Amino acid sequence: MVTDIRMINRACTDDKQIKQFLEGAQTAFLGLVEQHMPYVIPLNYVYKDGSFYFHGANEGRKIDILATNQNACITVSENYGTMVDPIPAKTDTAYMSIIANGLVEIVTDLNEATAAMQAMLDKYVPNYYQAPLSKKHIEKYQSSLGSATLILKVKPSSITAKENKLNKQMLYYAGRVVTQDMSQKSTATANNPTN
Image (cartoon, rainbow, N blue to C red; front, side, top):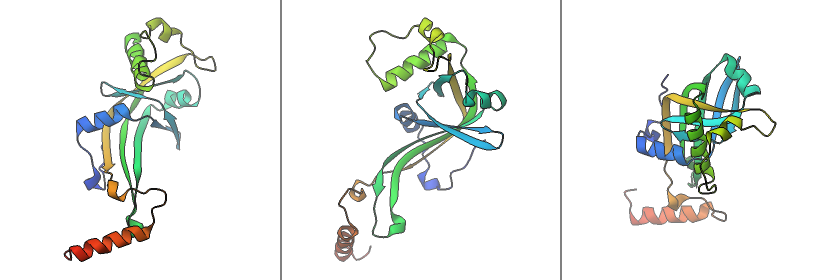
């Protein structure tokens, strides 16, 4: 399923930029559907080889939902600041966001699971550990509640990306007030009456 972006002027189609964004963003929101009720959870994740990887306990609400419905939506978004305008309706946010759809699958290949967890450590705590993860560690790893841990994967069937680039001159900061921007706008108009 491909969903068109209504604000086409904000669509991002640069695969390199999308990949770079997904590799660097910190939190993904995983959306699942339990009967007719959405269930969305924030996760640490890694984007590797065109797929999203995350981990979690082998029991609980997420696993119960996945037993009956593997459809998922992943959203990743970063806020780069609020941009002001003397006209309140034109105040806006600088951001980049991704929405991906696909099926959640349990990673059963130990090599793939170990590589995904190593990539996650490299992302969140680079150079902290002196040795790479062993397959044995992944096999025996347990959650904080004592459950076995699963590595889960979503290979997107579709991805859409949007961005609104930051205009640093209009970035809001504490103490900035509308009268500053109104005086700048009227000075610019006086200097260039074609505005």
